[in-house]
Amino acid sequence: MSALSYSAKLKSNARVLRKSTTDADNLLWSHVRRKQLLNVQFYRQKPIGNYIVDFHAPKANLVAEIDGSQHLELSTLRDDGARDTYLRRQGLTVLRFDNLQVLKETDSVIEVIYCAIAATQIPPDPPLLKGRKAAHAPSAKNEGCSNLPSQKEQSETSRSARIKGRTPL
Image 1 (cartoon, rainbow, N blue to C red):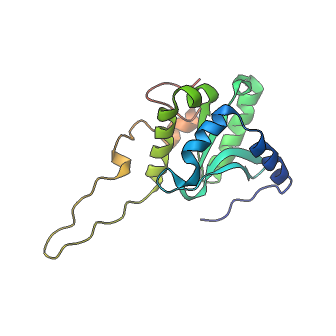
Image 2: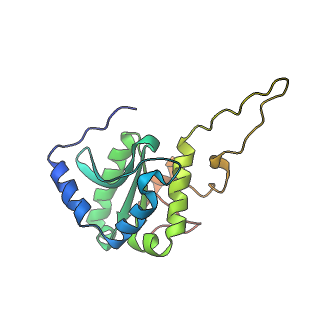
């Protein structure tokens, strides 16, 4: 995995953003920090290219964005689309949630993030027992993670994350 480049001038802006987070940011951070999801490290307010993303999990090539009401404005939607396109071209999966989803449907948001991480992990091969075939262990990919949108679905909508069949705003 190669390191993602970023504009050095964004580093100080990212520090400021980390100190002035929203309730939704704080709530999601409390669930993803310290490798709580599948032992994957997340970073907050991480510069990537000319952007600062809300949450980045490099091991899973994942970005999670939490959008406030300003992201419903047409010009912001266009900017978000360009940003998402750039991030996807860097090999990242982009999940977008609005503040209310994070605050009111926290478990569903965490499930979508968990499934996105699980989809990137290769399950370890089970040990071979002498004289027996290897057992097929269930993977996290197959356990309750069928609601995650495909990359094609993500690029066809302005919002990438769907929660329990709910179409994003």
